[in-house]
Image (tube, rainbow, N blue to C red; front, top):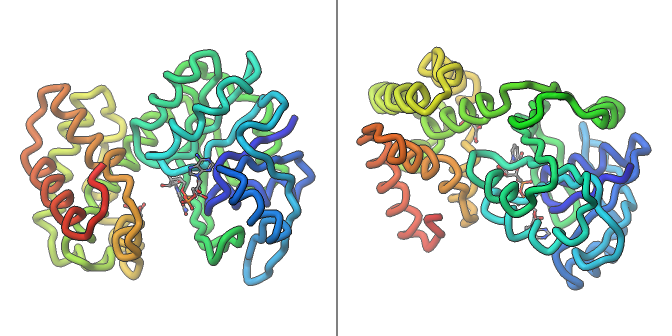
Length: 303
Ligand code: NAD
Ligand code: KPL
């Protein structure tokens, strides 16, 4: 069964090249004729893995191409996912499955609402990749991908393709808990690294700020039906800060490079959920406002 991959950026290319390398049929879906022409001129997708570069001539097409889509990996940013999937809806076969790789929460519901007949499998990944140039991606950090479907707990047979491709993964009945936990970690760390303009380790100098955010996040998670995601959150945040002390957070990297952030699907989603559940989170709200002001000053979107 062919994997269609929507979004030939960092993570989409990392998945596409590893699946193709394992002999799994893959097709890329590129945004428009200009990008398709650029891809064809590049001669394929290059994966740099442990210093070794290898090009994979994976076939590519436009969203308007003919042919049904049975399995779609959505590898766009959270803010692009819904609009990117929309033109593909007429091509989805009745039993189509979508794998949603977006970080944070909110974009998955938007995609699922637009594709009510498709099965939506949610993913939470700690793998790391970045684009060295267009259609050339560096595998930067070993990690793990959790997959799950909150509506249908049974694991799909295609997980075998991921094993064949050497993509470390596991199926979980609690994918929402995993996504909420990652969101909470991102909320406690990433905005502060932007506002203090520091590496993750720089937050060791701001323990009280981190602690108060964690206590509000714990209260929110408990009150919005995600108590497992709240367990030992502060200890985990402190562990991640120590373990990644030398790194810049993904949000810091986005802001430093003038790229749009996924703020609405991380801190924005946490604050909106708190408001919906009538949970007071004054420090998270204030952090959200400060972050939006910081982004506005730099001409970056606040959604
Ligand atoms: P990216 O910006 O590198 O890639 C996204 C790709 O989607 C781009 O190539 C863009 O052109 C394409 N795209 C956008 N709209 C499109 C459309 N309408 N049609 C076709 N293509 C379209 O992003 P990324 O870093 O791969 O991140 C994807 C998601 O994975 C994000 O939610 C991110 O937070 C998450 N994530 C990334 C990493 C990582 O290391 N890069 C790790 C974990 C999670
Ligand atoms: O996931 C992260 C990110 O940079 O996005 C870390 C810093 C590990 C946790 O917030």
